[in-house]
Image (cartoon, rainbow, N blue to C red; front, side, top):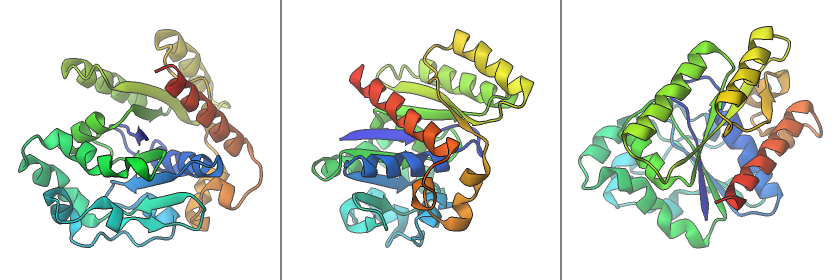
Length: 249
C-alpha cells in the first residue's frame, strides 16, 4: 500500500482536484484506491456526491472507537472508494494533542487497510498543524501543488524549511506546478527558473482550465464527464511521473 498526501500550506492551489483526478486514474489503471477527505470543508466528498459525515466524528475515530474500514463509502467508479470528510475534522488538532504519540495516529489508522488498497490519497487541509505532522508521518510521498506565483513559491520554501527543521528525512516532498497559465509571462518564467533551483519538481504542469473548474458542477473527476482534454492529458502525465517516483524509492 502506498500513501500519497496532496498537501500545501496555501489554500486554493488545486490539492483537491489533483487528489480526485489522481485517485480516479489510479482506479482506472486497476489499482484498489481510497481517497480520504481530511479537509472539514469536504470538497473531495462533494465531488463524489457523498455526504461529508463520519458517524461518531473525529473524536471517536482517533479514540479507536471507530475503525476506518467501517466508515468507507463506495463511489460511482469501480475500485475507487472514499472516506468522507466530517465537519468535526476542524478539531482534529485538539483531539490528536490529547493522545500519546499524536503524530503516529493517522499512520496507525491506515495500517489495517494495507490488505484492501494499493493506493491511498489524502486530501489535506491547507495549514501546518499537528494533523499535518501526522500526515507527514503516514505518507510515502507528499505531493505538493504550487501555482507559479511569488506567494505560492514562498509557501513551498516554508514547507521545505519545516521538513528540514523537524528532521523528517524519510518524507519525500514532490512539488508540481498547478493552475499554470502559459499565456502569462510570469508563470512561464517562474516555472523555468524554479525547475533549475529545485530539480525535484515534476516536469508536468496542470493547466488553469475551465474543464477542471467544471468538476464542481458535474461533481465528478474529469474522466467521469469528458473523454479527452489537455487537462486530462496533464493529469495522466502527472500519474506517470508519480509512478516513476515510487520506482526510484
